[in-house]
Length: 112
Length: 113
Image (cartoon, rainbow over all chains, first blue to last red; front, side, top):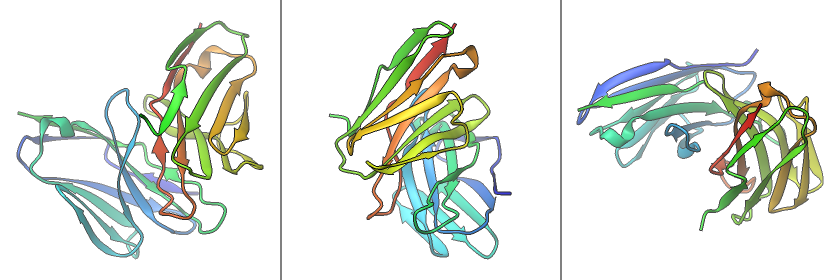
């Protein structure tokens, strides 16, 4: 089967750094996405990794290790508005059958 | 103006009624998707379309149908609504020539009584 695992909940303090992990077991791999979703709102695209290594985009960075089936999202200088659910999603196949496999999301609470 | 719009944003309907949720996009993307989201279950794919003549079932298509009227429009119908179809529904689009990341509409909150 195909599976994505993320922690269900995390808590962090304003101004701190938090790392949200994602592990995946899929039939193939053609890219990994991170999305942010505030309660009751639509998911918004944060980052995309297809090659091993770290992608940095402002306060957010995403890392990928294909050999380990592992990714993490790093959030620096946490702000209250970062309280949200963070979804990890994988494209298991190239070509026309490019449906995403979604994790259940990690609910992050940022406390003052 | 929003790139992906959904109508209606909220809908309350009765069991057995047929309803349609509509999605429009101005992003020029070729691929469109319908998802439902239930608390604790994550995003579940209902149907997806990779171009106007292409319609595919997702994980949970039973009880739903779709129509891709144009590249920019993708509608979802519930033939005979039932209470367990109460959920938050999202439309999404992606560009096969780009990174294929998906962009979501604001969602429709559907309640079936």
